[in-house]
Length: 228
Image (cartoon, rainbow, N blue to C red; front, side, top):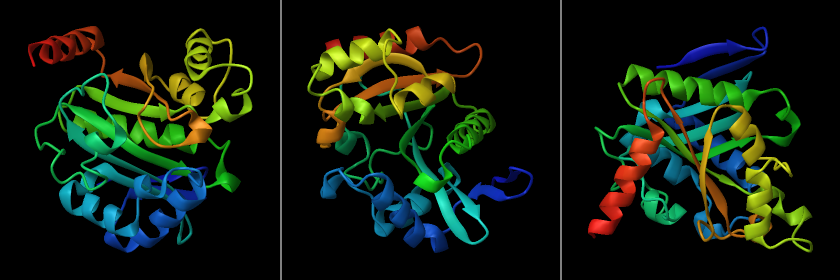
């Protein structure tokens, strides 16, 4: 269980409880207004995540208000071209979470707009990294939404936008902070989810623990895919 004071005690980062599910849904609704409704997490989904993998669900609170949350599951290193719905078992995680999975997959992170810019996402990533180490896992995986594409859609294709992000020629409100937090770029997934603001795209990234070879994990995944 995680319980940590942040910003001189103003906020608390802790493991979520079933009582948080309603507010976690509210964070989701506010943070992802353009995400397809069937891909948006509800209180029922969050409650199930807490049943399946309780230690992997985190919130940050300001007094009794949930102002940020993140949801994860354990998996083998994922296929390089998967979708949000596939990896999350259509948001439930019941059939895709593996109790001995070596990678912590972040399926959701949201910070209420009024609390952005306070490095709360970095605190959540660091807490996840601590969880990875405590469970003897290899690292974290996430697929960051290219939410900034909306500003450039009339100038670039989504493929061009991703290439410019990769080369640090542009910044993205989601992807850029994730890279700065320590996540390493792997590749875009161009039909990861249904969100026109993000060009239906997200960037597959990973943060291996020290001494873990990310390239080896990627190579194994590619080999497994070729065998199918």
